[in-house]
Length: 138
Image (cartoon, rainbow, N blue to C red; front, side, top):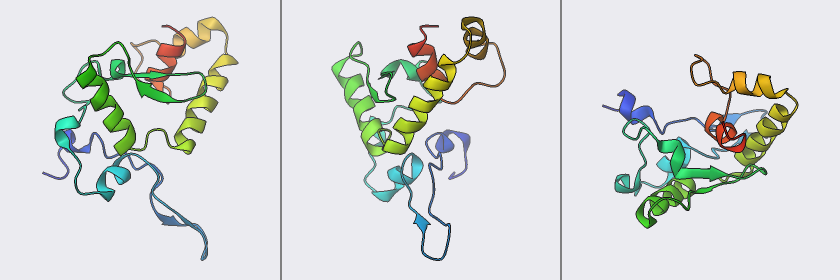
């Protein structure tokens, strides 16, 4: 059951613990590792991407790479989004930086190239696709 697809949806590695040098160890910072740190993960609060077609709509992003619950959702839905952000450490400075860098890189593209990159019919999506679609209003 551990490796069933539905169970892997929140298992992103997020910078796992690995030895870089004898003295340097990169710690687990976000995503599935953070969920597993505390065995009291509340699955009733889980926004499951395999069960929600519109999971991206539960979150909003700003131009600085921050993620927040969507204020247009119900109080219960916002609470679930906040829980996911907190438990998966999605406001981790590394993720915020990655989101900011991705957004700024897209700004260097022509408008037609941005639309092509964010076209929902393509087979490969750029990193932080949901954020980019929201920020570029596509």
